[in-house]
Amino acid sequence: MSDQPRRPRKPAKPYRRPKKDPVRILAFEALRAVDERDAYANLVLPPLLRRARESEDFDARDAALATELVYGTLRRQGTYDAVIAACVDRPLREVDPPVLDVLSLGAHQLLGTRIPTHAAVSASVELARVVLGDGRAKFVNAVLRKIAQHDLDGWLERVAPPYDDDPEDHLAVVHSHPRWVVSALWDSLGGGRAGIEELLRADNERPEVTLVARPGRATTGELLDEEAAVPGRWSPHAVRLTEGGEPGAVPAVAQGRAGVQDEGSQLVALALAAAPVEGRDRMWLDGCAGPGGKAALLAALAAQRGAVLLASEKQPHRAGLVAKALAGNPGPYQVVAADGTRPPWRPGSFDRVLVDVPCTGLGALRRRPEARWRRRPEDLDGFAPLQRGLLRTALESVRVGGVVGYATCSPHLAETRAVVADLLKQFPDAELIDARPLLPGVPDLGEGPDVQLWPHLHGTDAMYLALIRRTG
Image (tube, rainbow, N blue to C red; front, top):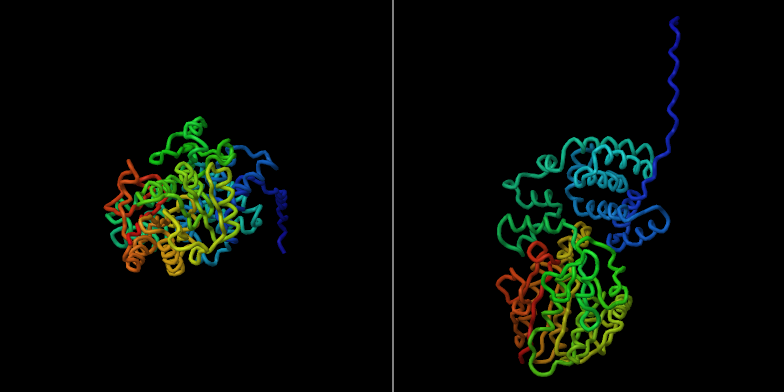
């Protein structure tokens, strides 16, 4: 036995409780809701922010940071997954989803914001201690310290395949889109590398809030009195809030005289309203009216001409949203809950018909970044019969000499030109009319006669519109 005296043990460090950061806890809760419940961030985040403002010392800067953390993480999820995968010793599918959410939030702070490295790591580790426990917080700390060794460009050089070897996979990793989405967007857009990269970059930019002044109820001048408000690019009824802000705080929006509506959506309604029809122009139909943005604009335009809008929506709760959007319209209108493929109205009842059909939503990835990770190529097969059925009913519902607008918030060719081409074969007494002259001043509308809008070219969602006239 050794005669040497034992060294005194160092006193154990007292346990330090983790610091609760309300901004990052809120962002984590939003990501968990998106992951666990298939919720949409634009629906989950506002009530979380309202609750935070009511219960804590949570100011506008905190709300802006929380919003950036949620949307930035969702937009760059594919890129961050590739980086995290290079820093862990197991497949990502074996990492618990809550742990992966904390790692993704940390990766975004390190690679996608100006937050200093030490602050990004320490704040993420503190979050992990609060929501995951001390044990898994050590794992988070180790992974984030590996991520912090390179900036975003350095990581892309390591995890993205060279463009010349696999162009689509390279773009998918660099711009954080699933490969099949890159391929579909590229097919629809056409052209070379520059155009598709500009489109993918635009999908990852935070869109401005766009308001619509509903004719006869509000004016753009009234909305332009708001702070940081500028005119829309193309729609005479559009106003953009360049610094974000809370649209509900705008009096005209709170009163229902104006609304939040992407400028591409406004252009679809305006083009249908401007299309020439033969004979009377008294009855308009919005056959897929929920949640009510286009219907509210169409109803206001119809009222100025003495026409009546019928707004139809299959889901009763969405029909309720339509009714709310149309409340106070200066002219007559009606809202019904009806299946657009089996309508209660007689064929040939309408002079103008709009069907903005359900779709994959690939045209609105700026606003709903999580949609890119949920959609699958097989989803197109599920939407195809409904899209064709709704367009068929629309063509049956319009009278001879009237016009149908087929719209979708997707540029995928299977949801746009393929649907229109199939239905034109079934209706030889229908013809496409050129939609481009009905959007004066809007550039880069292609060869026509249909129109495809793009985020990188027009600053709008990627709305598609085809105008069809019944001729016999």
